[in-house]
Image (cartoon, rainbow, N blue to C red; front, side, top):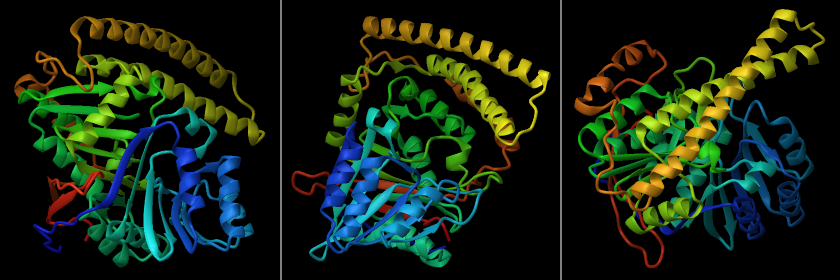
Length: 429
């Protein structure tokens, strides 16, 4: 394990947005590609983006991509048509969830990272979009090319280099855990405020760390992004933030230890108060209600019923497609789940209304938390958090405590947001 402590690198022209125009932003980015485009595509089912890729081919742009091994077929056909090079991230259960791109124009590299897939639904969602140039863009291209080349050693080295710029990668094949390490480290170092905004919040280690932060007096707030059309995952810790494709569940943070999903995810960690404030103000402008810990826990229990129904419907659909008869017992179970899901949805809507009314009264927002934000009642004294130890002991898919730590420091680069890092005990090797 290489010791790269106290190495800092500056990001040139870094810009961060929380926006509903991620598809259009990518189209503009791709339109500027002249020599080459390297990228990672999770899912593509969006005619305008397909046309963008075709037009790059017509302009003679050399294209190469890393695809998801489950969703690659239609994308691969399109890429073959335009003469692009592509490869899947191994085979299922490996999952390429990363969405990063680097273009070369006039000999200059520029990077683009998004949390949104290329689907029509993304046009309705709030996604994170970031762009940057220079050495940081070269580092991201190294990550992409190592993935396409399926070279584990190069991937480990590329992930380590990218982390110096705050570009954090989880790569199951290479064992890189920079994304997981940085998220946990942000929570551990938080002293005043934490905001958690994610579709899935179920990793027991993450929950324990957030509970412990609440117990030491950190004001913890949550966003129920599934109700607000926000898709990008976010963790704010004081003046720093992580945003990226990894949500806070074992599927994303276990980083290869799960038998059924071995993920590759990509994100960025930024220390800059102005950038953090702008993101939180955007969430408030979108009228996203602020959930406190006990309120957010209730939303998760409601979603469990909704998710269970979705999975069972998929199972029934697969049986019907295969021509396998669906039994009366299976149909009865489907009806039972539909009724439970409908009741859970009603409870969730009621809770959302109640939360909005409470915030109108107490004035708590994402950008301006009130001084008396209550502690998570599960975490006072860290006793309830300690009760998670059984779950932690039983979670064989979890990472062990070997994770390296990322300490943050910030520098300004003109009008853009700058990031510098001091990385110790680099992970992934």
